[in-house]
Length: 329
Ligand SMILES: NC(=O)c1ccc[n+]([C@@H]2O[C@H](COP(=O)([O-])OP(=O)(O)OC[C@H]3O[C@@H](n4cnc5c(N)ncnc54)[C@H](OP(=O)(O)O)[C@@H]3O)[C@@H](O)[C@H]2O)c1
Image 1 (cartoon, rainbow, N blue to C red):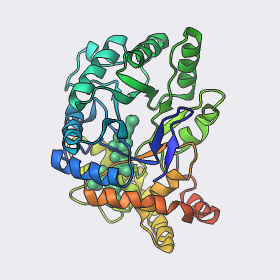
Image 2 (image 1 turned 120 degrees about the vertical axis):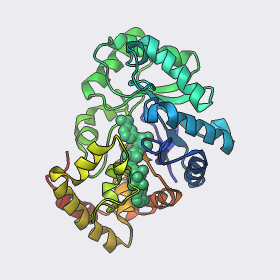
Image 3 (image 1 turned 90 degrees about the horizontal axis):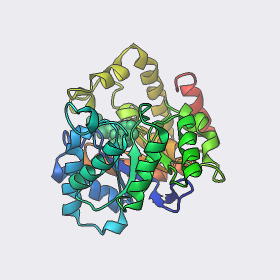
């Protein structure tokens, strides 16, 4: 496993990391979380991603219990949370959003659920147009100065909003965001490849990216090519939208492309999952690819992706490009 700098910060993050969206607290209990996280850590993963909203706080509770059982040295790994939607079923107005009050209270609650003394990374899970940028940047700076957070970032913010946060930080001598967490995979590219292009310049923002859903929620494993397996996340209550995205009319051309991509993976003697994750790693502006899994075997399989990166020559990348032309957003 290689370690990449998180944007222009000095923090070294493993090129593959592991997150708990959907899985922890629903498909994955504490014992399975221990085994999945151990498989990732043993392969060199040092970053574990979470959010207050994942299974309404349960995901952080499961990860916290797992971390306690695993007993790793606290300075050997990076753990994150994200703030925005709250951890309650029906949050009250003060229990969500990016107000200074919720930033601080949500951070304390995440620390308690995760059973750690500080978060390495803390993300604003989405922009909140109802809170002034100065309040957000000040709130995050305060959390850093109080030792509760080491680096703060954003998730799915526009380039314009990230630049604004950076400018506000410079204007008031506050701490700017270090990273964004955007979706990035073979079918979802524009933000990372185009919109953020200017932000990677280390003489300016020097943005890092911790990218999510490298397998498009399993689509890029090829597992949906002949129907939906019974134990897939898309059959869970509340994820009907994901099922529709994959098996609905709009998803059909992508499914067909995945069948073609599977042949490219076959030619390389690898799996579709490994090839799709390796494709994300080819982009030098990706600081880390956050993988997800509901089973230990999936973690092990996905970790093998790093070996496939050298096989993705210009010629192979071009093949992938032509199969997916017009299908990526
Ligand atoms: N910031 C944000 O807004 C945001 C949004 C989403 C995710 N994230 C982060 O990104 C992480 C990764 O996202 P993701 O979970 O959507 O990633 P993903 O890699 O696109 O999907 C992971 C899912 O695909 C299936 N899978 C994974 N590897 C497989 C394999 N080798 N063979 C067969 N099936 C496999 C599993 O689902 P089944 O076993 O259920 O089929 C697994 O849970 C999340 O955990 C979270 O930390 C962030």
